[in-house]
Length: 124
Image (cartoon, rainbow, N blue to C red; front, side, top):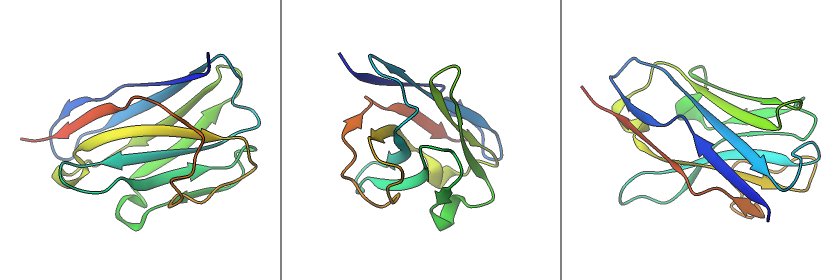
């Protein structure tokens, strides 16, 4: 069974950091474009960051540029989202998604595989 599992969410104060991890089981992520999405309460799901299958291309939504970094570890079959200087408006459930293409835009919700989500709460 092909699955994506997110981890690393939690409660953090404004200005703090978290690193989300996305682990794949049942398949290798080498040939997949990966994206992180988030959905805040009462809002639509939005693409936060995406990375090509080679890792050579990345993109970020404007609101996280300079604060978040997406990366992938092929040996561990993992993708990460390092989130620094977190703000209250970053509070959301974060999902990783994968699609068997070289690259897919962050704003596209047509990724084939989705994880169950990891909750991130930024609050003082």
